[in-house]
Image (cartoon, rainbow, N blue to C red):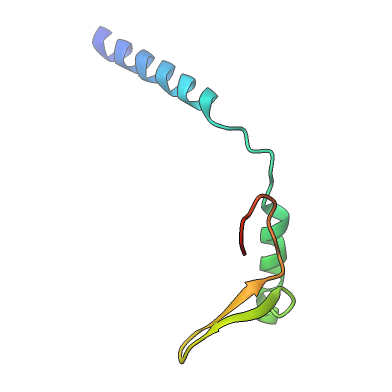
Length: 73
């Protein structure tokens, strides 16, 4: 039992230390996700940008929604 307690204590200490080293994201993507969800029933017509690539089975569009910190949409 003493060994189990020691292992649990060591694991908890390591996890706590590791979590303190993770970056604290201050950027929220919730508003961007909400825009996409609300536009679902309109076939994303309000957030579709220009056509990028069109093939026989798919059409790829750019997005009018640009999440903060993104490099491309």
